[in-house]
Length: 130
Image (cartoon, rainbow, N blue to C red; front, side, top):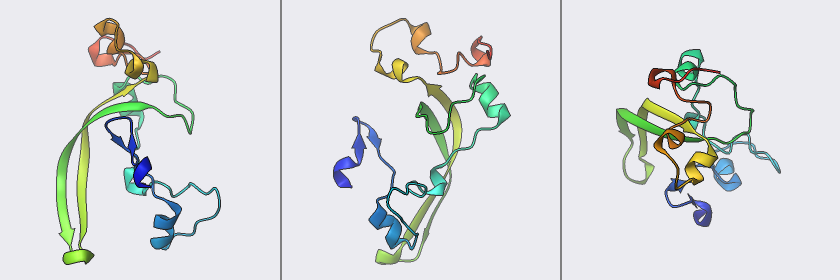
């Protein structure tokens, strides 16, 4: 999957190939993408987080969104040595903004339009959930 690793200029596709999943001992069938992404890459937003982001209407499952996120490193560990070493970094999301694809594609426009999230401006910045 090396050719497909980069999407755009800055994003790395985090999906695992069927071969990688088989190598990890996971059952894989044709068309099965349920384990394409490691469970540690999921982010769950509850009522409080959705309200802070100004989300009034939930997106549909399978819909793709763009996000800008800032993390704080909460821990970094290495277990084992040499080629058997396993590395792990624990990240805490500290700041987040969910953006529409239109916002990302637009190179021009006023700052007000560019600053909007997909679901409206966050409440603490003067917006209200719809």
